[in-house]
Length: 202
Image: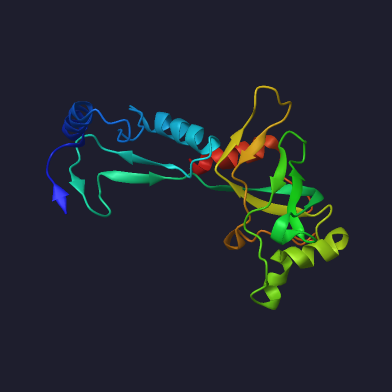
């Protein structure tokens, strides 16, 4: 269940063992050495943009242990901001004829994207039907169009060939109170407010 050899020493041992084995089917897991927490967050965001769920920050001095360890920390930044819903896209395959995703943007139009994760296929209770794909598809104009929605994400990104920013892994989280009544909040957040939320989450 444990091996009291530092991670740094184990990495050397593993690299030597794999090299001696000479197999093209066994390799070291990709890793990056970071020296500050800021570097760790930047690398974590890079991997998330590439499609990874997150990363694990590990102390090179730490021993190996089966299960959780105080020498490593799972990294998965999550922040929430408010966006204006400007459109809807129909789903595909099993979501054909239902809402696939909602189109959103920040109040200044600097952040744009779609959110299709976190919705329900069947409402659990009457209160949950606001998150139901079919209910949204049937009532979009009166339910969501022009309304403000709280959307969670892992990072704010910008592609080289894009003139606006995007959210990495946008999703709806009912814990954050995703839907906003028009009387509760009528204005979406600006790019600067969204970025401040992201920096605060980090």
